[in-house]
Length: 80
Image: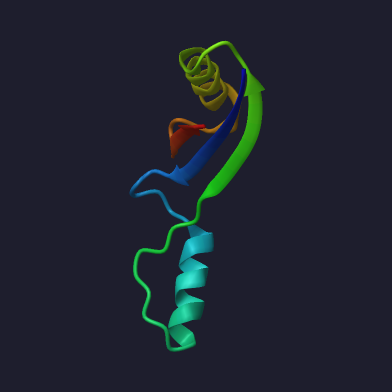
């Protein structure tokens, strides 16, 4: 069975995010009030597996080994 997977990656709370800080300052200069901007990376792909549990195990392994740095990133897996 084919599953659609989405992994949403963000920096952990307290980690510096220069990109989000720059966007927040630029929006402020344009007159928009914005707080706590955060940027996310979203990775989507398809995976063939027999069941959702196996898909989740594989994607967790991918996140731990390649897609994220568990020391500085949080991630959320969505399987459809």
